[in-house]
Amino acid sequence: MAQITTEQALQIPQQLQRQGSRSGSDGSTTASNSSNAASSTVLSDETVTLRELQVTRTLKNVSVESYKSELGQDSTFVKETLRNKLAEYNLNPNIRLTASKDMFGNMEVKGAVLQGDLEKITTDLNKSQAFSDAFSRIQQQQPTLDYVDNVVKLSNTYGVSNALFNSIVSEDEAFNGLNDIAHRYQALKGGAESYDGNSQAGERFQFIVN
Image 1 (cartoon, rainbow, N blue to C red):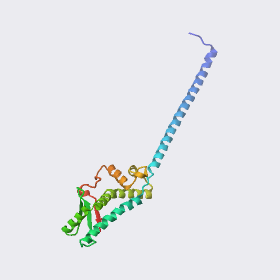
Image 2: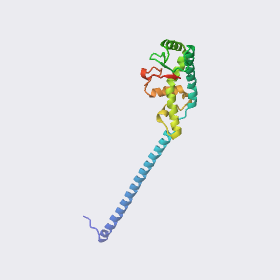
Image 3: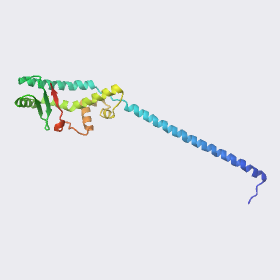
Image 4: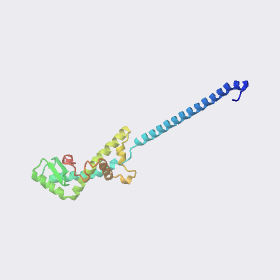
C-alpha cells in the first residue's frame, strides 16, 4: 500500500469539503430547473384554459330576425287559410281551430264545429299542396327557431355561450339558413321526432288559430 505524507493527509478534509460544496451547488441548480419547468407547465396550462374559455364564451352569429320573417310568412299563410275556411263554410271566424298532421302526413283539423264541417275543411286542406308545404315547414322549423331565439336572448343577457348551439351553426354563412339549422338540430337530437313531421300522436306539432 502506498504511503501518504503528513501534508497530503492534512489536505484530505479540505478536498472533501470542496467536493461537498460542488455537489450542493449542482443539487440547487437541478431543483431550480425543476421548479422553473413546473412553473412553465402551470402557466402553459392556464393559458390554454383561458383560451378555451374565450372560445366557449363566443356565440356564433345567426340572423334570428331573418328566420322569424321567413317562417312568419308561412305562419301568416296557414293562419289566414284556416280563417278563410271558417268564413267559407259560414262558421264563426273566432272559433279555435287546431291543425296537425297524422302519422301518414295528412292534415287533421279539430275544433268546436260540426264533424261534417271539420271533414270538409280537412279535405280542402289536404288538396292544397301550398298549404301542406307551408305547414310542413312550420312544423319542421318552429321548434328550432324557438330554441335558437332562446339561446341568443340568454347570450345577449348574460354573456354566455352554448356549445350545443355552436355545434349546429356552420362557419360558412351560406349553410346557416333556418332549414339547414333545423336539419342539424333534429339530427343532434337523435331523431326523437322524424324530420318529415310524422312524430308520435302525443307529440305531434299543432298549429292553433284563434
